[in-house]
Length: 505
Ligand SMILES: NC(=O)c1ccc[n+]([C@@H]2O[C@H](COP(=O)([O-])OP(=O)(O)OC[C@H]3O[C@@H](n4cnc5c(N)ncnc54)[C@H](O)[C@@H]3O)[C@@H](O)[C@H]2O)c1
Ligand SMILES: C[N+](C)(C)CC=O
Image 1 (cartoon, rainbow, N blue to C red):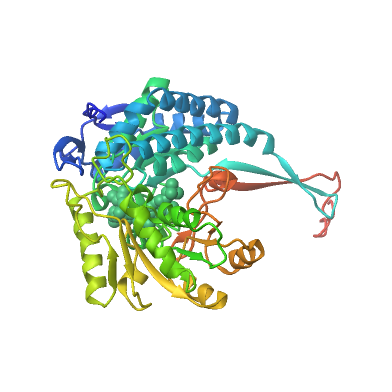
Image 2: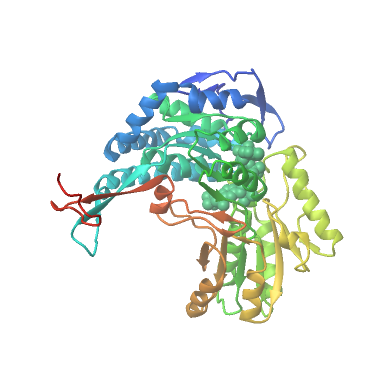
């Protein structure tokens, strides 16, 4: 088993340096796999948000202007330097995230790889942005010439969740900085350690002070003041639909743009023509048990064609029994603990409600017998589910999959779309025409064919309906932080000639 990492004690990262929170409060950091308190993080309040956003006053404003006016190529140098430092510290950061969140060490390493790749990708887009400035607009007249500038939106507030702590922050920080924005990042109070280390990395590479500020603390105390701050020009939020609504309400008071990446209850439809059942089973598992199911896009509603349902479920149970559930620092762990006691209790309640509503717990549903301590829950498969049940309708955000059986393609589509959410969906079939047909009619921002969950930094990410709006990643991620300015010039020597020239007296 890997040795637990040393936990650094950090302050808030404001204006390029570290500060104790104004009110001196801290939040304990609990390793959810051992229940031990391993450190603490600062609990910021509105006073600290004020410092991060505005208290730098004119000096900070000048620095921000400097960052905004720097060429994309200059900003790219800093982003590449951050990526290089992440790579240098990858094992340490991964271990830190493992003990902070309970996710398996191997998954944390993969996340840190993605973090570095995301900074590198947006370094590339920052450079390319220089070449896209002054793009001419074709006009049907000669007296005007128009071009377009893409300018940073300004100061952005980035509020992020605990499921992929540093990666979800990076999806926002990297494009925001690439665009020339300055940012205040507020990670989740349940997993902030690696985001604070990002502050240390910014310090090490000499990122101009005030460009990225990192405020840790509780949502209502440290997140809400960012959302409602008059000098924060945009909010990018990833988290629950309930919090997303509050953020949108606060931002609306100042007509502040928001992008919202919210929850999901995504379907995975599996047809009877799959020749290789094990291949489909593995994707179904990846879709809902990877990262302990704490994935916004988890395909947590499994739809099985009636002809393969029994065989598929037998095989799924066999595979699931084979998952190594252990302290996430152990070699080969594939399911760690959930994030907190609160989340553990919430997931147990989902399972007991499903049981009391008449569903069958086909597998799992409890704490694994070999683990006496820590917030562990077995991978859980729930069958005999009806569409009115809570387990079908609400996001669990844990290792719990619910199953329904269908007879026809149209019934499968109807069930797949039977949700207020619209983040992702998947279809597995050996008939590619059928897959393409279904990809078109699933109401979601992402559709996977013959797989579930691959996430590519180059491709757009985001949802419809109550899963939010706006797209992260790819060029869409950069556009989130850019404002488009039209510049139009009148270029004839003569008068425009609409009004009559007064006579010269
Ligand atoms: N769509 C996506 O890409 C995506 C990705 C990851 C997670 N998620 C969603 O995130 C949720 C899980 O994350 P969570 O439990 O951390 O969500 P959450 O909504 O509880 O918290 C998210 C962030 O918002 C902050 N916050 C809470 N109350 C606030 C308030 N009143 N004002 C401002 N900020 C506030 C929290 O401190 C945290 O930093 C799930 O619903 C999941 O689906 C979505
Ligand atoms: C996209 N992903 C899976 C990395 C994060 C969503 O929760």
